[in-house]
Image (tube, rainbow, N blue to C red; front, side, top):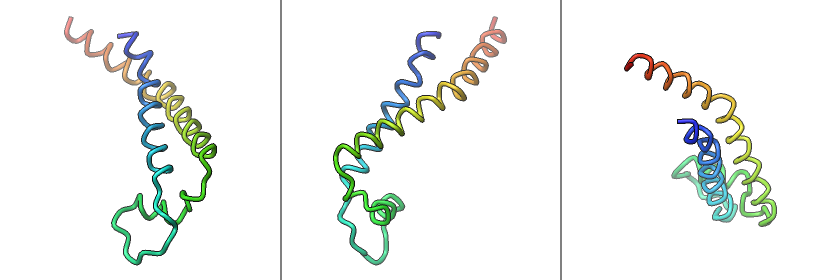
Length: 92
């Protein structure tokens, strides 16, 4: 249990980093298309993600991944550990 909880923030952070990089890096050009098909497309067009250089993509990706990893380490990990320990006490 301890090993899995120790790696939990790393996996969450890496997953979010991959998703953020793919959204920012493959943003469509900033053109007004009329109706937007999804909220992600809307933010890509409004925030001009296509104008961010590649080094900016890496900085944003690493920052968001580290913030998510820290949030998981501070908030999710203790709650999950507490609930697992409570379930183990009930089963024994």
